[in-house]
Length: 229
Image (cartoon, rainbow, N blue to C red; front, top):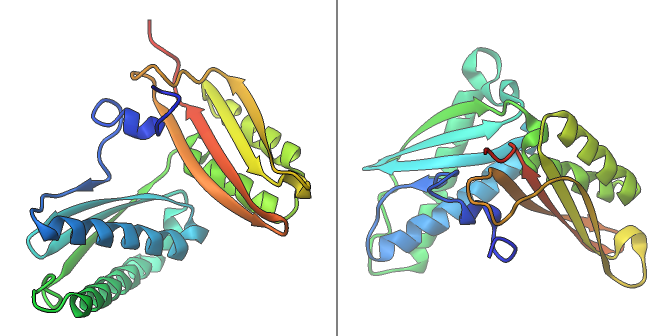
């Protein structure tokens, strides 16, 4: 079972918590779910330079709290907190515009209130970026786009992850690797990745790399700690 599903979803409730924490019923559940997905896409593009990892979303009545995890929090916060205020206003504008567009597409019912939205932002630094699968996957994908040899990029990434204290790491590339005529898969591993052991903290991420020969998929598994006896 551990080989067939997302390792993080497999460990929800035991190792990992839910990224969105709120309650909604009926049609509003789907509305909030879509809004969360679009908000994550927006923040991933806007905060890419800051090393965006993930965002936790908590909702209450007319209030939304965002806990943003980045590897370079100083870029988001800015001097004297000015960057944080600008980010808050940008997110509020994005959400209000998104809700207005959704309301126009679903006439006859009020999608949600657009003028009474309050957003709170908290920025959390990533302690060890080399133990974060999304950041490692993005790093490898960016190197592939810059036409760095795949073997060198993956081996260097594995070396950094293992030096950071990981118990194991696996990188899987799939596609026209290095501009080959026929698509293939290449796997690079080090240490142990016990995917079927739920008590192991295994991080997982996917990041596509758009090269001149087409997309190359990058999958990364990182086991952050050794299995306790």
